[in-house]
Image (cartoon, rainbow over all chains, first blue to last red):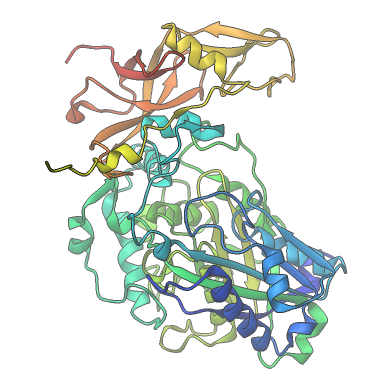
Length: 391
Length: 146
């Protein structure tokens, strides 16, 4: 176990650009802001960067989704590279971070810049949020079996998972609401969060429905912003201006049909497989985790991650989140930056940034006391990747 | 004479399935009023969406097979959000499991069913909505009358 690649890399730097609803700045501009700040945070200069990776790279997608490709960013920063990668397929949006860890551990590069940039809020300013496939006459690929039936959003696809979980285990909308209202309370302590005003359970329940059981506040908030991290060789830890964040274990497995609607047991997700693998790569246990940063593109996904990571038994995530268990000051402070529900849909990387800051003790009012172990789980449905990070 | 603005929904055609090599037979069978899926002749496994290889036994001897069109409701959601201007809402999206094989599912719409009647595990049968000369969409309705 001592030779696992996780031991040979660290997260040496982290930074975010301005984050907002209608910034009307280009993806590339936001990315440069975050990248230069992350490089400086790691105590490096741009010329030290010799690896570059991003999710998802230049793919077709909804407006504002993809962000700039890595070659645009390489050109912008004027850097030479020994390793580079982007892609949509892989263990969720943190795939390029996991692969950067492997590339650094394998000696292909020493300091890799990894970013995720979105501008979905500005891109939707004129139209409102459109469904997937809107504007196309003919739908290709897996969407052909969903989009013509009006299942035009992951909100629809995952509402089906949530309803089935409610049916089998008695999970309620109030349980989903605890994810949303807790995130909002935490967002009030994060100056960069999008929504910081208080939200009660009554506010949550009174919001308009989107795709039941998901109402407006079960769905994350599209935003503009870029998050960048630096993955460095572990020996760089001695030169850092702050504490290093260490990779303890990662999870990348997927063991059922990689499909939204043909996935075997839809009360589980790929999170189950990634999390199971993560715990085989460490001697730490769920009880050792000081804070959990778990994907909440929809509130229900967070419940799925809580079960997947073994914080409770199968089907027990609803009752688990009751009684302040996931609040700051509780036994498992969750999504302390506000999550994507209140902090903004930074598409996975917001959780990584917060885990790093918590482990470095830089979270001010929302700091988890003596935070030594953080878990990050990203993705939903047949998409999942996770990391256990330590200081 | 005043020229009224065109309704915005005209900018957004109804998205329909493309006829692709592995899926064309499915949509054309629906258009002909039959629910057909690719089946492995070696092990009997239904493969949907169709693929050139059976993922269970890796057999390559596959052919279309007709299904009964009977299913049970595995899960559902009532969609209230218009995903493009002019889209009529609400509507019911169902995830139905075909009776022929555990886990063999279609994402579809549940029609002719009051929303209060929707219940997981309720029995359903297929009905086809013709959308053009090549394609019909398989929708589902309750087997039992209200």
